[in-house]
Image 1 (tube, rainbow, N blue to C red):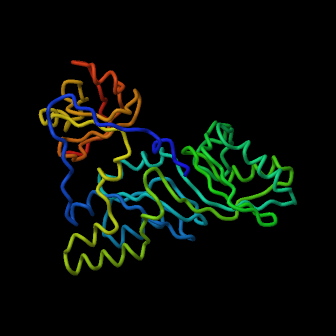
Image 2: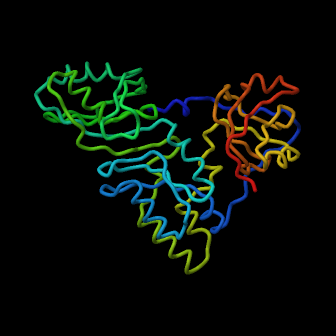
Image 3: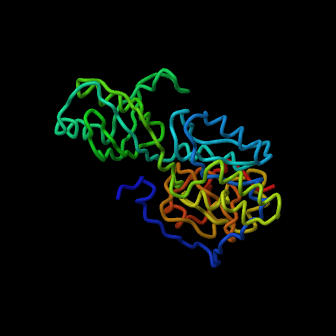
Length: 314
């Protein structure tokens, strides 16, 4: 089974101090609504921003946003966040993605040639973003982790692909068509995964609407939990550190985390990584950038370990 890079990393929790890391307590409905993540299955038709506006109206949440824009014709996983959790959305945008799609060729090509050429688009590739994109149109390198052909019917290629963030699947389809000498274009695309969020665990707009109205009627938090995750759960795929309670007062003001304040950390941390910062009860406190690797953190008795980026505690 194909996996994105972060799913292939072995992770261990390493302790620097004597302590016990416990699971975070479940948040109630109001807490989730004000600071939560939704794994939405975006329907075909509306733009991502229009979906957000619908949810703003349904959930009566003034601060709500999305991560990893999907075109109107594209369906699938669209991370949504409310309140301060909107500040983690860039991390889902930076994570790898998985798609299923259909490429229609404009001429006849043998299956053997199709398979041969598609293999050439796995690994490091060069792309120029399409005209209708939010980034500058200049050649850039991206990585295609896999490109599996599911079936070929006449001139239609049904595929699944895992890619680095910022890879344009529409452009990938056009480039494959050009390489085959017949041209081609993408006619269908569905996002199966964005970072840790998977389509088989997603919810629809109707699911959200139904459960929110049940919550309004009963005030039972279980209905909010059916479509909204705690941010600490959604970010559990990130490298993590757990800090001593004495660090928290300084962390509130954006202070960096120094090595002596770290109680435990995960073994895959590399310098420059985005890191989630928790207390020993697994409450999400902040996000930061690693200034030390896991090996360096383990040995260090002093020094700046994590530069604080985003603070969630008040």
